[in-house]
Image 1 (spheres, helix red, strand yellow):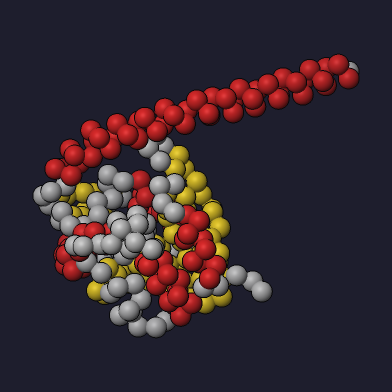
Image 2: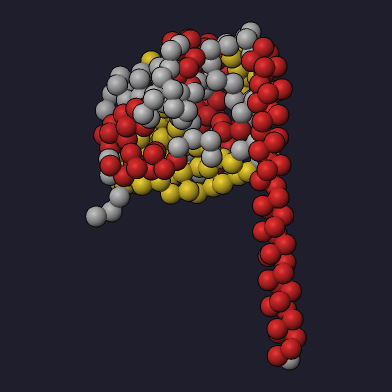
Length: 250
């Protein structure tokens, strides 16, 4: 019996070693695929998105101008939406910061949430209004740099698909991608967040392994928050994470 047990343990260890070896071999392959994707796919995508496009998801039909982040070609929006879809939304006060196309905001509103959708990009605000009307979905739409123009109130749920690459945005479209040279976006986000939540609020933010997660966690901590990963999803290009932003307990 002891011999059988030892064989089982040895076999199990061997299996996990094989998995670890396989995972290590995948890393350079994943890097190669990411490089090829950037080199070959990105120019085609930029050209495709240089004109206004139509996109439909979960029965919501969107008109997306070139200066607005397109949820159909990037994993983050749909990943965050699927997670939010698992939560009770009816009668919740819901805020989508940096709503872009408004897909998440409109989905939440269709589930019965009272939704505020904001963006710093005036092109996004205009398309949000048009898409709200065409889909006949009630939304409060505010042109705002994070919390700057949002009336102070406590939301039940806040959804954030932030810009997270370190570069100073130069155009309205850049604000969907770049958080400033020193991550200024996140400093502003976490310093204002405390005024828009209550004890039971759920704040969700999607990030990927291509951004400075340690910097973002440090900035959260400096402002009394911590990031707790609630979901991780890998694909051949990147790993995406959904973090719950919680207040630090003393």
